[in-house]
Image (cartoon, rainbow, N blue to C red; front, side, top):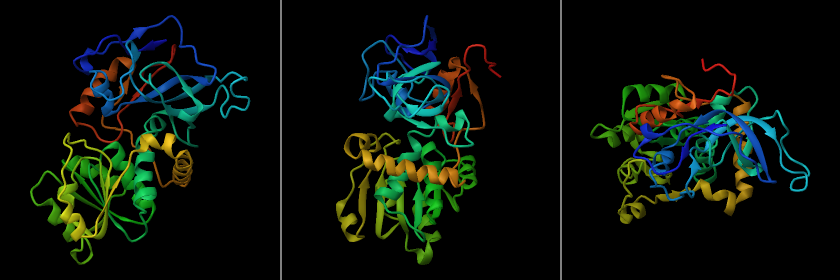
Length: 339
């Protein structure tokens, strides 16, 4: 097995190296052993490798989380008499150790690769797709006729949100900081694009809506609640998804009251523990969209990354915000071409 092992915290992605192990990891009785064919990068990986994330495994550990691949072995019959997956099945999931040729994961962290999907597209699904769906559908109740503002719309979760909102009949205004990223957002279904690095973007958003009333839903993974209050409609819903800008906002609550706005948080990572039934509902809805052709993969396509040796380069590009969608690395298995 080959993997990016963290023996000590590093200064950044360029310091990551690939380690060769004599054999794949040994799964626990409840776990599956999976051969990874693609692994997806995430911003939290950049923090974790430097020891700055809220969840830090004890050293040494293997970096990465999201992956897609093939089941090599299933759980022990004594631990799981009716496993959902069998050797040879294609799965995607998330478990500590995604930057490797092999990973162990429990059944609740795995899902089947959607029909017609490849490993690259599936590897980037586990975090962004349910975050977008649970936020817009479960928490905000998006519906036909809504106007939805998606911030950082060309990011992985942003492109997922654009597609979910469109699938439910909403009109989508996408924000991004470059013309290329706005072009990408439109290619995934956004009706309008606004550069949020320009002064006065809030007025431009509001002007696009019927009678200038503002948007009904704001999907915010950046930390732009305060400014979004200027272009949200009466009875609007603002979804607090994350703080990619790096600042935790302080919001003037009188403005929330005056516009009858709902501030709605989403912590998708806690749903498996707090509301496992909702997790199943969210994925059921997503699979219906995928199988109906209304949700497609969001893999960054301007450049390809093949081999674990390219993970550091991929993470650096992600950290510099040079990319769009999900940055996914192809992981060739032994004897497989790296082309």
